[in-house]
Amino acid sequence: MMNTVLREIVARASIESKQQMWYRVDKSKLGEELQKKFVQLHPDEETKEFLSASIDKSSWVWTQIWYLLAKAVLKHFWSITDINGWLGRGSMFVVSGAQAQKLFDAARVRPGGALVDVGAGDGEVSRRFAHLYTSKLATEISCSMRKALSTKGYTVLDAEEWWRGQFECVCMLNLLDRCSEPRGMLRRARSALSPQGVLLLALVLPYKPYVEATADHKPTERLPITGTTFEEQLSSFVTFMRDIGFELAAWSRAPYLCEGDFAQAYYWLDDSVYVFKPIEAAT
Image (cartoon, rainbow, N blue to C red; front, side, top):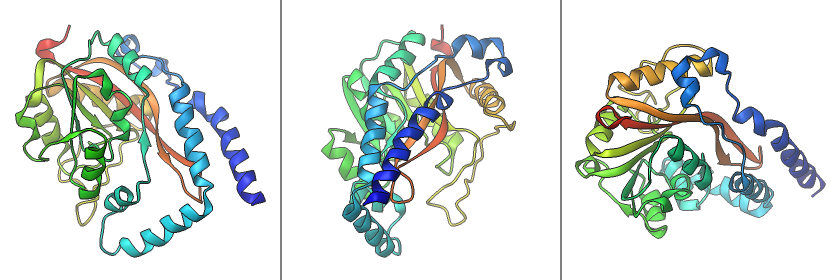
């Protein structure tokens, strides 16, 4: 019991030391356009609530033991994504509703119409801001995650045919480094966007693709991202996106947060978050 309490104290204290680092960018390493379109975010109440809930949940001893036992058995039959969906664990967080609105404001975007979250998982990431749109739709290949999406009010679309519709916002939040054909996904997003629509995209940097569905866990397509630092890879990615028809409207850096477990109260990666517009509609 004492160890659990001590771990919780340490976890909460570590949040304070990490929070500003999570959102920091070295602007001296960026070109003028990227500096101009950068939106500084800060940890807000919604972010802190997610972290606090993650710390609390990680200390639920019997719940965590159940997760460990279930995973040990089910991993022989299901993917980790399916297991997490069935257990209702492993929820993620990227930006809050207020942070998303700040990015939209900087991009001069007025949310409304239809939003589709491609590869939505359990929907917790886009749920934070999906209410800004009139209707929320999603795609997901995991059966258990599709069920979770339906219970949260998402209309679940066919994962292969979704792009034949028209949407005011296409979300690809930490999808490109987890799918086999990221270029193909971006082409579909381009086709699915309405003339005034936006692509809300998040990508972990440094770029290290991992595909759960392939035997070697490697993508069949790899994004042409170069550089070693966060800023270098971000610049390379934005250049690539422009080459395929997307104009950067706003961007930021934020932590990609995930609920923790016995080993760690929460997990995080460095996320680059973007609002892109089709070049014809860019201002």
